[in-house]
Amino acid sequence: MASRSCLYAYFMLLLVVFQSTRPIKGNIFALPPPQCRRVLATSSDVLQFTLNLLYLEATLYLYGSTGRGIDAVAPGLVQGPAPVGAMMANVDRTSRQLMEEIGLENVGIIRAILDTKLVEPIQMPLVNLSLEALNDFVEQAFNDDFIPPFNTYASAVNFLPVSAVLVTSLIRQYYVGILPHLLNHDLQVVKFGAVRQQLYMFANAIIPPYQLNVTTLVDRLGQLGNRLGMCGDKDEGLIVALQLGAENRTTTNVVPADVNSLAFSRTEREILRICYGTGNATIPGGLFPRGVNGKIGDLIRNLRLS
Ligand SMILES: *[C@@H]1O[C@H](CO)[C@@H](O)[C@H](O)[C@H]1NC(C)=O
Ligand SMILES: *[C@@H]1O[C@H](CO)[C@@H](O)[C@H](O)[C@H]1NC(C)=O
Ligand SMILES: *[C@@H]1O[C@H](CO)[C@@H](O)[C@H](O)[C@H]1NC(C)=O
Ligand SMILES: *[C@@H]1O[C@H](CO)[C@@H](O)[C@H](O)[C@H]1NC(C)=O
Image (cartoon, rainbow, N blue to C red; front, side):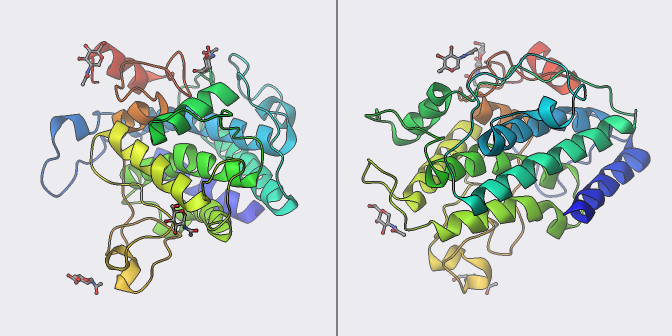
């Protein structure tokens, strides 16, 4: 796993070295509608924005697997307010190992980005990973109250759908948008693919005490992301209609992509609309109650790019 992290870091470095002042290229196809356009930013700004998401993901998976955060594995690496409500999840051994590995890999990537000195460091924004905050997303996804409230940390079948759809998938979709010319598709999907694979094992599992299976939860959270993101259907469920499966041949959907197996990408604003849970990139809430940090976050706020 160490070599995989190194590879990640290596590509991150390449990006910074070769692209540090060039603006991100726009979509080569039709111009998307205004709310779906990328914020004009340099590659260092983009990596700085990514730090917010990496902090969030590292915190969620490290707490979920070990009950402790980034500080415990890399003291002093990241400053900022302590995360709210993150805790150890009651998961099986395989899931725990996977989660811890993702958390540790993220710490490595964060360190690699900060070590370049080309990205202005940002504090970790306040993140809200409390039972209540995550339950809000699930209730919003079903447009219904959960009684008892949904407990993301109760088991792997509770935790992984939430972490995969609300965090890991979004980061992957952001990478797709920012690294099309540098990062090999396979590299970016490694981490997400691993979570997705694990989820697929649980596809039929019922989440107690509700009459709800993992497939349905992933579907609904994905649809919530699509609704909040407001730029089309980019998150698919675990099992899709045959016509949407890769090469028209499969109904399992371990790695979401269009029929030509190209991964979907999301912009900063789409990601914030989703993570904030508000459908508005200028109204913080949800996972980032005080919003994200850094230049792109400021730009979105100041220019009111909702
Ligand atoms: C975390 O989210 C819950 C549920 O929305 C909310 O009640 C709580 O105030 C939030 N905590 C912070 C520090 O924003
Ligand atoms: C999950 O639940 C839905 C709705 O009850 C059902 O239609 C579907 O067949 C179930 N899927 C799996 C994989 O168990
Ligand atoms: C998948 O099926 C659709 C219509 O059924 C067709 O247009 C498309 O070319 C097919 N894709 C592949 C990769 O075979
Ligand atoms: C987002 O929120 C801002 C501030 O409340 C508001 O002015 C704007 O109209 C909202 N945008 C959308 C698309 O709802």
